[in-house]
Length: 214
Image (cartoon, rainbow, N blue to C red; front, side):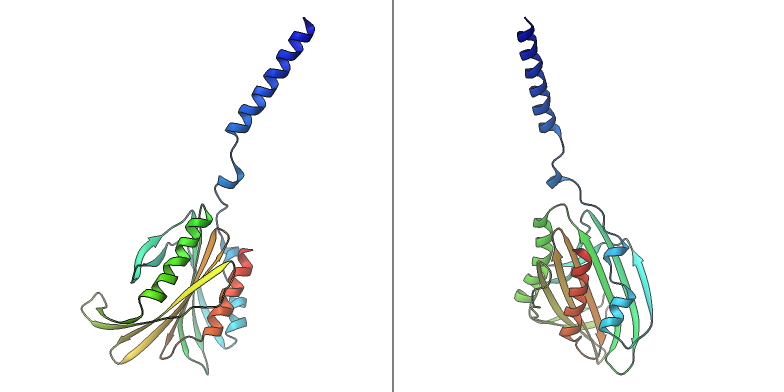
């Protein structure tokens, strides 16, 4: 009789263990930790790439990313599981006038969703090259010069785009690099007045951003 009771107890323990295993959360599917200020580039990081930066103004917000959708520059809002934005308005001496540097860090629930964001920029730079006549939203005519730019691999993967905004006789250029590390994507957007942002500078910022995501 004692042997039978012991076998019953063992069976119950085994059943409970199996049930707990079925109901326990899967670590792979657990919600990722939110991104924070520690994942953003610092002013020291920026000054490493742009040593002539003078009195930069930095703003940090919990804002979504506006990523290209098809051949639209500002096509769709991307929120992910968590996101953070850091923008820097520097003044540079002796080089191109950098108007704004923006960095969006977006963390997703899966690597597949993170890859999809990087692929949006890759699609844009491969399929949307050319001149596009549009407006500034207030009736002013604008010519967008969409140019191909495929950056070297940064992080797990990367992509980018290059756009010139021509209006009123002046051209403002934006070079963007999107860097993925695991389930997180860092998108760095450098805007320059008068000439194209240097590729080496933007890639260097991307490499520093990738290090903060590892």
